[in-house]
Image 1 (cartoon, rainbow, N blue to C red):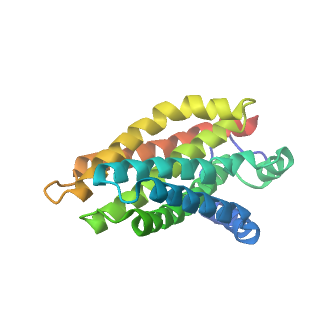
Image 2: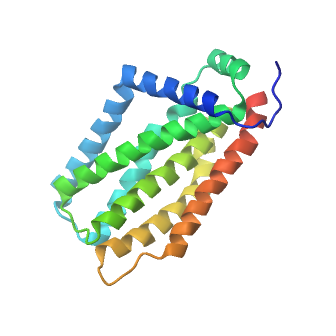
Length: 225
């Protein structure tokens, strides 16, 4: 049975592909522990260098670390799939199912890594956060946003010859606005006098939904190649 370039996603197929990625991660675990080692060692080096930074420095360092965690955790998702395995997926699922399963799995992975990095940051570099609840919500939203962007970029880069160059060129204009929005939003969590603007949060959510739509629309054309 041949699939059209754009098909309606199947919840069953998405869950099956998501479960496959989750089981592989649980069985192998080297990727998870490698990223965890990267988080721990980076934060420990920051602790040895600056101990307890002021709130603005703390906030900036946190989101920079989140960016590199996402690159290490998410960007490999498509690059590790062999050509033969992609051909097999082509025969059993639609491109929308495949890319949505990847987005879902990478979102879950990045949410876990974001919470772990927040915990380690608080333990080693102090906790200058004045509004813990809103900041945790921003961390989860930011982790989700970063995972969507880099999953989308990894899907494009996996079909190109210069993978690293493609991700660098395409990633910079996409990720910088998100990081600026996240840092601007999270600054309010360190100052009781400031409030987190709802319209900026909605703008960030709208960007995330746009990336999901672009992935569903554009990935089938890459899938055909």
